Length: 293
Image 1 (spheres, rainbow, N blue to C red):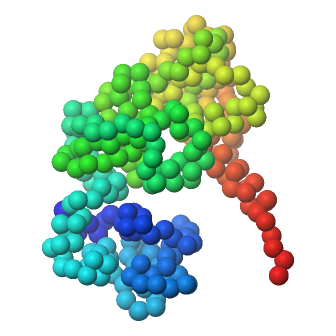
Image 2 (cartoon, helix red, strand yellow; image 1 turned 90 degrees about the vertical axis):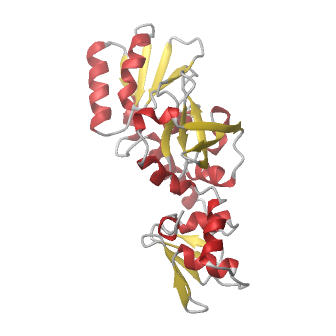
Image 3 (cartoon, rainbow, N blue to C red; image 1 turned 135 degrees about the vertical axis):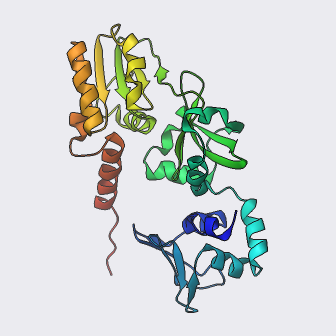
């Protein structure tokens, strides 16, 4: 890796890797306590759009390389040697651009599969409001194109894994649907596994009984699910509110008589998970303690 490549990695991830978390942030910027010293007020700012930093207490700033030179008190060469030993997930997107996506499953090696433990993955799940559904997912460490990566893994019926983290969205192995059986005559179909995890969070509040579940892992995989749908008494659909979702709902309604479009629950939102995130944030804001001065 060279300096140009290293500077494209999100500085937020570099800081998190070093054990530094923001004291406050929004979509455009993040503020940290001085990572080079000790202070009580955050004076270290990241511009997320430019991926650069500025330390107001010292009047200095720069890119990732500048940061690590000062942080490690070393040379550019030694910084790049340090970077090569790290596992920056936001660099995955660059690595994947050089691969044939149709043969992606042939270019990887799974190193470890375990329960979700990594703080970055737990934080991501918490941000998506599904941190309590870890029984359906695993932490996958894998090697691809000479680099080690990790992510949240959701297994499909062919033994492949949908891999997700804050920076990556890929499939390791053969693309397929995921079927979860509960010996039910009812089935609920989801476009992606985060929507399935979301539904499991709110299922009891909707007064829905556990059923069979089919997660497409891509709306284009609907043809794989269609083969088994005729056996169900009721079919509920929870797709994205977009053109692709509309098209699949229309197709299934024409072919089957027992189809219900569940998207009325999150009308006005991109998908079920976005609905849960916003509703949860609104509730937390509403009940946030207010202290009198």
